[in-house]
Length: 157
Image (tube, rainbow, N blue to C red; front, side, top):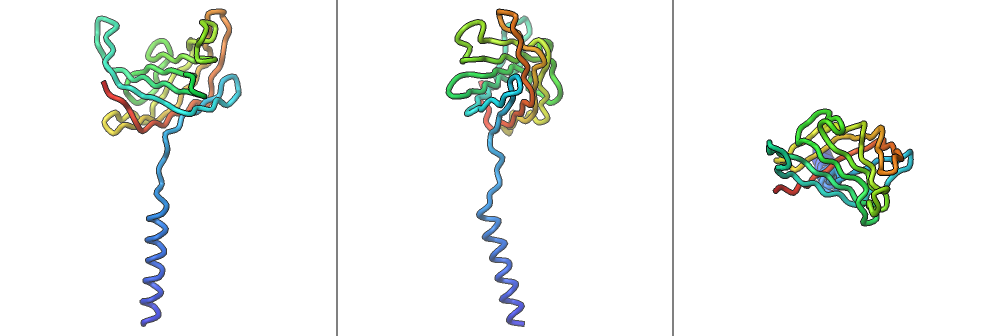
């Protein structure tokens, strides 16, 4: 009986140590491919604010991603779950070289964002995005695929 008690205590202590040392957290991630090439995103910024640029004010979500300190993508969308089509429901802009020149700024003509989770109270945004056709001022086109969003911090204004 003593051996069983010692064995059970030993197993329980191993389980307790294992679970206390392996805190599983899903880090803030943001990734995508531009014309088939992986873009390394090193930081993101999300902001919930009231848009007042039209006759009707509405809450809007802005997500900005940076690579090597330069802005690479900006998404402006409604803070709700579900699919949002580019130009109609949301705006997605891709920046080459931080958007230094007008020819470095590509505005989505086709594509969109799909938030599977958009919980602004808990500061969690999760979803996907893609751009089937982004055009710059020189009528050059880019394609953005495999866009993934997971953000755990939203600034509120």
